[in-house]
Image 1 (cartoon, rainbow, N blue to C red):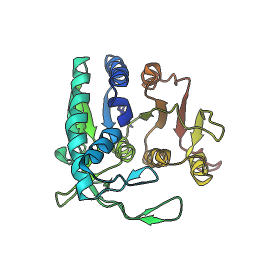
Image 2 (image 1 turned 90 degrees about the horizontal axis):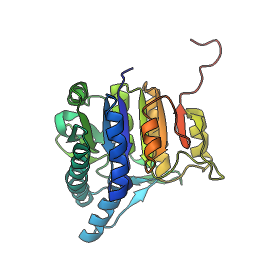
Image 3 (image 1 turned 90 degrees about the vertical axis):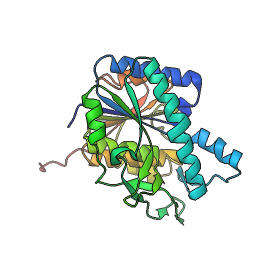
Length: 278
């Protein structure tokens, strides 16, 4: 297991100036301690606004964006352009040696077309130009940068073997990146203080078996399902643990980099090994 931390930031945290400043300040504090890290980001609201301006209907299922060719063009333009550049500029201004990338750079986001999605409501949905990361993704550019003290900031655009680009869910991209890097921790941050139970309270710790119960029981819905799936996949592939935190809370983001867990966050861990098994 490596010492790298992987942070994923939802677009809602970097599309607002005040929230962006909170994120950037926290990342500067983490970087000042010499912590190796990589960042993945989304940009949902700006994509939605750009789609509306272009007269393209937004379509989603279980928190996943259904992506036709016209939608993909908007996604690439927004994520790889405005959002990534603004985020990288803010980080560098704060003293973080950030480098902007997409999954197309050096093949770090090699992907293939996602299979039809089996929705929670029973439908089978073709997601279009949505990709899922593949095991032949080349992490050398990421490890080279982190090893030299830089912070890769990656927009979740995938690259197919035939050169086609894909829209990759940011949580899925971050989970795969963390797994390929064998990261000690994946930190997923949005505007919710962890995973909430049926009563709206934050669940402090849950294992992957408990995650499946939350999804199957209907407690986790919409975008949280994609997050939780990414978390369980990362843990199954050797990531140390996963934290879901409120990215508007600077202290929570900073403490995610150390062993002291945030006061309100959810830690997701692998299930205990049954007695008698190695």
